[in-house]
Length: 137
Length: 488
Image (cartoon, rainbow over all chains, first blue to last red; front, side, top):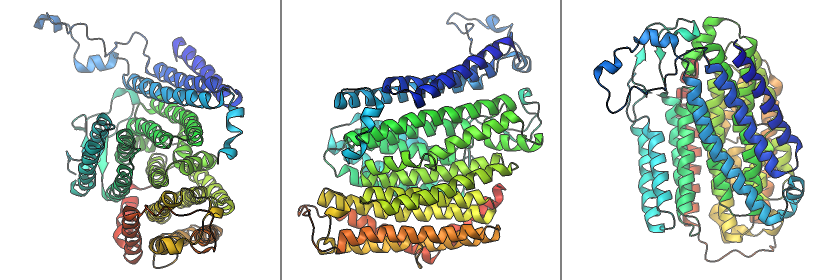
C-alpha cells in the first residue's frame, strides 16, 4: 500500500467516525446533516484511495482530442494492453462521481426539510423538535 | 439468452414519464393524460419483454480477466448488465400493477399533481433497476434514488409529522447508503469487480473470504437491513408508512419488500459460501417478526397498525430467506409476493376510510358497514388473506414457510409463523370491528366520497389474492426454479 493510500484511508476513517458521531450524538439538526454528508465524503476518499496507482495514467485525460488534431497527434498512443497496464483503475472514480451527485441531492432534501422544520418549531434542536412527535398525532 | 433491447425500457420509460409529468406540474389535464398513457406502457413492457440479459457496454468478454483482479474467469460481463427472467417478470408485473393503481388514485386528487406522480414513476424506475441489476453500481445508485423518491412521497403529505418522518428516513438513508458504498469500495479493493456474477465466481475461485471482504459483507448487510425496513430500522420504516398517504404506503411497503428480496438474493448469490450471513439474516428477521407483531397489537390508529403489520410481515419474508435452503428462500419470496397484495388491499381500505372520515383513529370510527358494506367485506377477506386462511394466497406461502422451517431443523420458527399469523389476525380484526361494526361513532362520513376507484382496485386485488391461493404453482414454480438455478 502506498503512503498516499494509507493517508487517504486514515483520513477517511476520521471523516466517517466524525460523521457518525455528529449524527448520533449532536442535537443540532444542521450538524446532523453535515455529519451525514461527512460519512459520504469519507467513503469517497476510500474509493479514491483504492483507484490510485503510483505514476499511473489517468484514463480521463484527453488533451490530445482538440479541434485541430491531425492523425500524427495520436501516433504516440499506447496499444490497449500497454495502456491498461499503466492506467489508474477508473471504476472507483466513476463511483465517486455518482456518489457526489447523489450526495448533493440528498443533502439538498435534508437541508430543505431542516428549513421547513425550523420555520415550524423555531429551533434546530432535534430533541425539542422530535419530542412533540406523539402530540402531532 | 437474448440481448433484449426492451429490458432497459423498464427503467428508462418510467424515468422519461417522470420528467414529462414533472415538467407539466400544475397542468392537471396534461399530467393526467401522460400518467394514463405511461401507466399502460409500464404495465405492457414487462409482459412483452423476452427473457435475457442486456449489456449496456455491448458484449460478453470470454478472454482473460482484467489484470487487476489476478483471477481467471470465463464469461466476464463487462460493464452494466440487466438480467430479466421469470422471477423478475413476476416481481415487475406486480410492481407495475400496484404502481399504476396508486398513480390512478393520485391523479384523482386535485392537490397532488405532476411532482407527486413524477416521484411515483422515479420510485418505480428505481425498484425496477434494483430488481434487474446484476451489478452493485446500479444497485447502489438506485437504492439512493429510491430513498429520495420515497422521502419526497411522504413529504408531499405536507404535514409536520411527515416532514419529521422523512428527515429521519433521509438521515438513516445517508448512513445506510454510506455503509453500502463502503462495502462496495472494499469489494472493489479486494476483487476489482462490481458485477455480481463475476464477484460470485471470483469469491468461489478465491476460497475463504478475506477479513476485508467480511467487513464488506457486514457493511452491505447494514444497508440491506435499512432498505428492507428490518430491525433495528423497523421504526424508521413504519414511521414512513404511517405518515404517507395510505395509498402511497401500499406502494412503499411493496417496494421495500421487493428490494428486500432482490438484495437478499444478490447477497446470498455472492456470499453463498459464508453461512454466518444466513444466521445474521435469520436473527434480524426473527427480531423484526416479534417486534412488528407486538407493536401492531398495541396500535389504535389504522395506519400505524398496518405499518407495524407490514414490518412484521417483512420479517417473515426475511426469515424464509435467512433459513437459506432453496425451499425456504422460494417460500420467502413467494410470501413477499402474496403479502404485498394483501397489505396493499388493507392500505387502500385505509385510504378510503381516510378520504371518507378524514381520520384513521379507531376510537373515532364506527358503524362503517352501513356506509360501505363492500369495503368492509373486502377488508374482512383481506384480513383472512394476510392471516394465512385458506383459500387465500398467504396460506400457500405461510404453509410452505412452516414446512421449510421444519425441514431446515427449526420447528420453533414454524410456531413463530403461526403466532405471527394469529397476532396479525387479532390486530386487524380488532380494527375491522372498530371501523365497521362498533355501534356509535364520533365522525360522520363525507357523503360526497363514493370511492369508486378505491372499491374497484380492492376488488381486483382480492380476486388476485384468491387466484394465487387457488393456483399457487403458477407463481411458485418459476420462483423455485430460479432459486435452484441461481444456486443460492
